[in-house]
Length: 130
Image 1 (cartoon, rainbow, N blue to C red):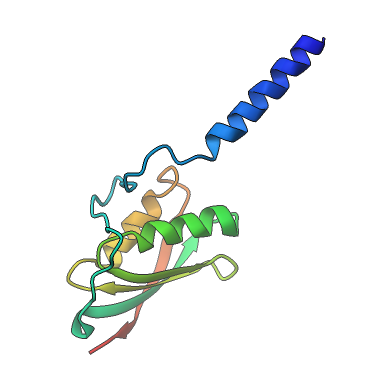
Image 2 (spheres, rainbow, N blue to C red):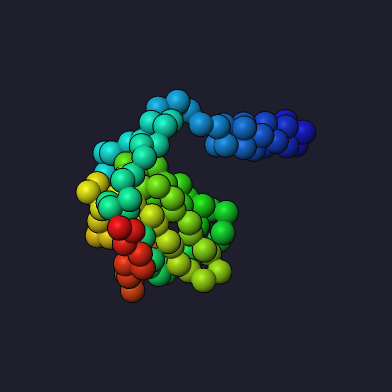
C-alpha cells in the first residue's frame, strides 16, 4: 500500500513539473500563420495602422483562454497590440493592414486550441489611423 501511494505521488509530481515547462526556445508556430515576430516589433506606418474589434465565443476562463488568444494575436507579424477581454468576450487588435486582415486575425483565433472551441463574430474596423 505504501509503495502504491509513493508511486502515485511521484507520478503526480512528475506530471506537474513537466507539464508547466516550456520545452523549446523557438517561437510557437500556428497552423494558420507561419509569420513569427522576433523580439523587436517593427514600427507600423500610421497610414497602415488599423484597429479591429470582434466577439469571441467559447472562452471559459480569463487566464487560459483569453490570455492564450491574446498571446497568439500579439505574436503575429504586423500586430502592434492585442487585448482580449474575457468578461465582455471581445478582442481589440491594432495591426498593419499590409500584413494582416480581419479575416487572418479571425483564422488565428478560431485555430487556437483544438480549432473548434472559439468562434469569432461581429468583426468591426473601429479605427483606421491616417
